[in-house]
Length: 295
Image (cartoon, rainbow, N blue to C red; front, side):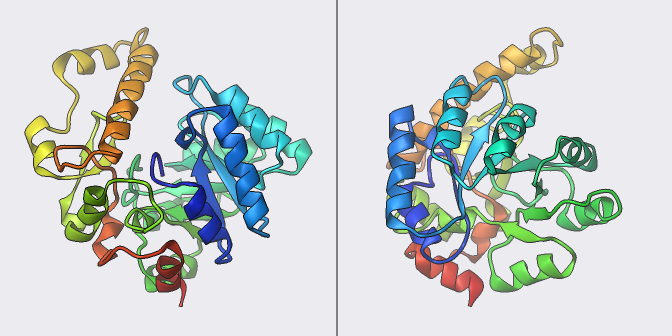
């Protein structure tokens, strides 16, 4: 989770026997990313350490991040917002698994053809950037076409929710939003409180953060500023020649805004979360959230 997941959360999760993944962009420099991976390795015995990589042009740090992940031999990488081809080509010879975020069958077939190890199927209940299809629609479309593991991402915040996804045919689940309100997260207390106080009906979709649809908590500030790009951003985003550049700029501006929001102490900010915060009733240690989800 951008600006939420940190080294402390990773260590607690891995020591609780689940796979854990942190966005490389949560560390400002390559040195900080490198130190974090080494610290996590030193304090865990898990072989399920993952790194999220944004693989589109907006991430100017990608080449260095990928090189560091390969050098330090992380266990898996999750790619999003772009083609995973380069990542797969580099990681395969090193035995590093690559899972790819997708939102539909077309994308799933493309990454399968590129020899990805698995798919993170982002559904319409996901937090952050989301898909258009429900988990049920995804598994029905994928079942006869996709032979690699499919992991469901979105809408799960309970043990029974995990079981339901496995029962319908998913190989596993990817869970984020229930961990925002954990004690180890270095975000504002107000952000954590919002995940406790608000529920699934308070989640709205905004294009202001990255240019792509993204779920946020419908705070008074969000209600004031709206959730759609302004007229100029909208026009430029539709121009074929300028679209990629405008989206890159919007993504960068939005991420800076989200970064400020994550550490702010006021509700007049933009906080990303998914509808699964419906099941967040209190702020707990990471390991206790895992127990709630698994026992």
